[in-house]
Length: 246
Image (cartoon, rainbow, N blue to C red; front, top):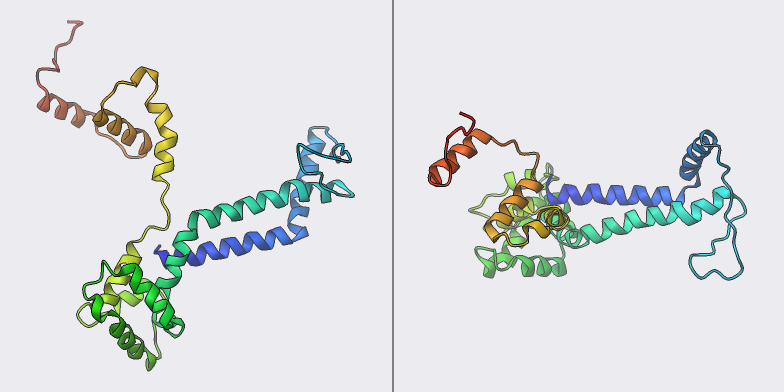
């Protein structure tokens, strides 16, 4: 999945969440399940006690439990999901929007302002930045008279000749290899507390990096016999292949 397709899917998910937030029927299904679970647990769902002046939490108004819990729990939870999507992909969204305009089906929306922003973003990576603006004009004219136009970055790159349109080809290549998002930093930070504890506080950087890689990428299978052979070859004096029980 390239950055353009990812942006489209993210927009669909965000719009769906906003639709769920506005729909009362969506929470009605959730509330029905809540009632069934409360019945099994022999718990009565009711509105908590409210005072005239609330200081520790929002004094949300609601005539019945379904309205109260929709306003206090359901809507804030969905708003949090939408905000997390915006925070995680906000930078990528602007970048993807500009890059999507290079696709032949979107070239009509590629105005002068968008061209300047796009070239400014990729100016250090372009093979011929001085002729990039003229190349974009030729690229738009090239597709203006054609009926069958590609609608994805991958298909557009296949129709873009690197010798005729080197700058456009480079920008599309960079867009295709642009990651949608990365959670490697968060994974490393959350894993660090499991690795660098008080018993391993004096380990060197190489050992810490190795343990972090092993801990984060636990899904990669390891050949332990090959590891032992490699260690024995690199450090023959540190490893003695002697069975102490014999």
